[in-house]
Image (cartoon, rainbow, N blue to C red; front, side, top):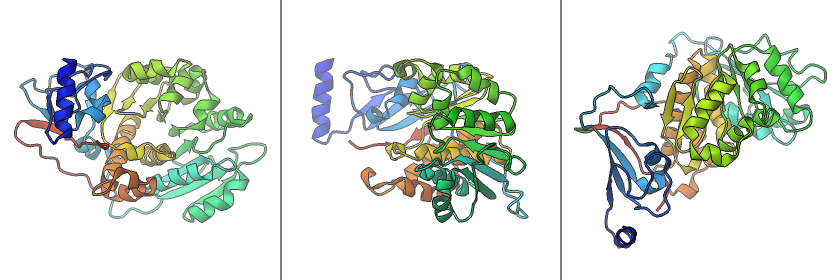
Length: 376
């Protein structure tokens, strides 16, 4: 079998097109592990996407899911697959009479000295997603950078005594974490915000470091309100107090476990991105390209989620929809150009087009399709 894989690879190098059925041979259908496997140009998947297939987009090429008569009565353990129809159903329309107040208000808390860029990127994600009004609450040393980069937003300073005294009566949702800092006072600062603000909230980035190994405490702050936590794999491991390899070996279980521990929706960033709710709902978002694998990408995503929460979208649907839009923007930004030439600014610029949700009409017998990503 190994010799056959090697022979197929050689033929592919000389121009052969490789088509895999259900999953590229050699890839574990559950985990995606593959020590030696076929690299396909097209994978025709039967009935439902396999977890291992979505984890190994580098080996799968274009993926087409075909109907083999299983119907829609899938087991409850099969997660929802997020597509354009999911996002369209979740989004509230922007009324013809809308103004900045009805499009809602988002407060971004972060921007420690030298880290203003993270909050700026979150703001750009929010602005490209339909927010009506933005404010920053930042360290005074970051105020000038924020005002220059984002003149549409007001900047408040962290007061020395009480970091939330002047801001709580304004926002419809709070995003805390982009550039928040990991200084010795970060946990106390995060605790003050999480304790005093009880409305919809997105928790991101440095806040996870502040609560490393203490998911129970963070969960106490998040429960009882619309909340989305957006860790990447290392941050999820940090919060749960487990090795990163444990998260990588079964990200579905890790996302579900973290959602239960935090009593909030968890968006676990990765390939694919997973969205888990404490009530057991689980969704898979398989859009995006390696263009998202760059510093600041998660800040943009958090800004999108914050906008949708402010506009009263259900937390689970807000997280899943934002991840899908974020991924679609990366695909649009990379159209017709080498992956190396795509920047995060290109992705932000493509968000406007990403919100033009396509009406997807699969071909005969097709249920869904995913484009090829990466190079080679």
